[in-house]
Image (cartoon, rainbow, N blue to C red; front, side):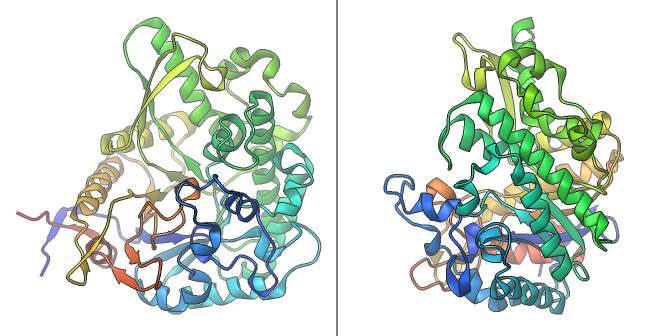
Length: 445
């Protein structure tokens, strides 16, 4: 029997949960009238996924969701991501009612399990039909996204407790438009900056659409927070860190919460900055008021001036630390000090491990240590006055991880990718104790 570390008890009403999303967990993207997304097309192109698996090869949450949700009954919440192409195969126009019905049943099943439904609208997987019309380089995407948000609200808005419109805008754009890894596999700074602006505009228009529909749930943003510091006190490294911090964090948070882009980026990018794409009224739309800040955290960065012009034309050498729980505390403090003490939800923390079943169990104690350290950092932030109201683990299931295919395992639940058999990991049992007691178990002695 576990004993509790009552020093690390969390506030009453603190919300716990685990996440799934369409492209990584659902599988069966074309079932029941669903349309191809950009990931369906991309994953079927040989050479794009290092291990060869496609989106069809994921854990098949689409068909197993009831059993999967039974594994986490009483956890607190389930933050699920919707596949745009399953609901609107062409991205706009005719609704695929069978696809929308799936999410309707998913919300009901979440509630039946005593959990709050948290809806993520977009995890980088818009319909291929919209990519054929320009994707995020087409300003009309913002309007199409708002229409999609309205469709979701009209069906699910009476039960969804929290809305998360856009997932990690910078992460997706960096890989898709700057570095050329994700679809549409571009390497153009100016086009990447346009894509960021259009996604921010889509977020703002979605917020406005939800408000117009009298959304009952709270509305937030969803941002990967990467605290960034200089590698040395040299002036050039400090300047490099300022630029990288503005790109990782300020390029999204400043317009959403302050109503303008970071001046350091506008100055640095110069002619590449999308001046002509930013129209009168855009910043008012992008900064439409939200109820909370949604934060993902996977590590911190240290920056130095590059010897040669660097990626994104920022001339920065970036060293990323994937295991820095203190960085989470630093990031949350900086978030409050820069943007005010809005309510915060830690939408994703998690780590991939080489999990294997031994004797019918998965002994992922290193993941438990990782989660414990990060939740201690989150608890310390609460003690320091941060209005942190919930923490969710990515993810519920081992899933399909983009160009890494099925080679990475993030889940609290192990999935045998051949048989689809589920096995709750030691970390899953541990996190269930955290969620049901609202405190961290005492570490093993």
